[in-house]
Length: 268
Image (tube, rainbow, N blue to C red; front, side, top):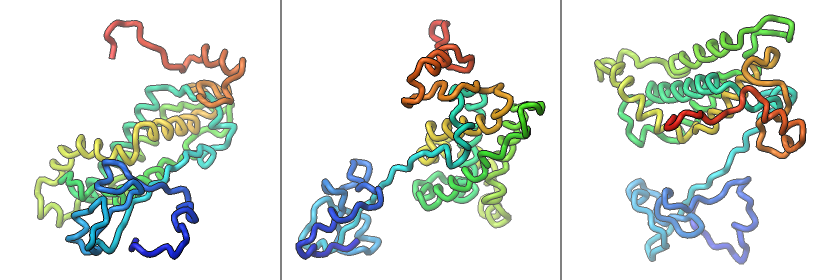
């Protein structure tokens, strides 16, 4: 955004930025208290040297805005399904959470190559992959049973979701082609060796809390009739105000899926 005169109007106060807030932290580079960085112009060379104060030769400024997304489980599942027990089977949650991170990391490697350069891990490249990954989870469509009377093995449905995630990178991006193998004959081996660092890099786009929340929704979807991986008590294990009643508290204490501290000393 170019600097301009306000002509007596406080433009910044008139705009609510649609929920966005200026980024003015140390990780955002040199900025003033409102998040602005100043430059002589927008040429690529000058953009490499931002200044937190406007100099006599600085004629343009720019800043980054950030908006916090609100997680809405009702976008995925009916309330009567997602309102049930939040103490989902920890093994199932871990399997699905790890599969999501592996899928996003591998897809990004197929897209950018195995260099792990910071310029390859950008919002414009990773966020579209993340959106496609969440769509690929098909939350709300993973239960193989149609009713409580129908036999169901939720672990089979979890395996189907994991299998779908294991092919996500190939289906959405495609494996490195002939040209890539000509440039780097060992590209497949390099992709495997780059996975650990790439998982760390993309985890800031799909962090642990978000993966756990999505994994729990998947389990509630899969286990909506059998209740083998979570209980049927509403708000059990929830941290919101709805669980602060006698029935909810009692159920939370008795829930077989609640997390407990290991009694063994020095257990990790």
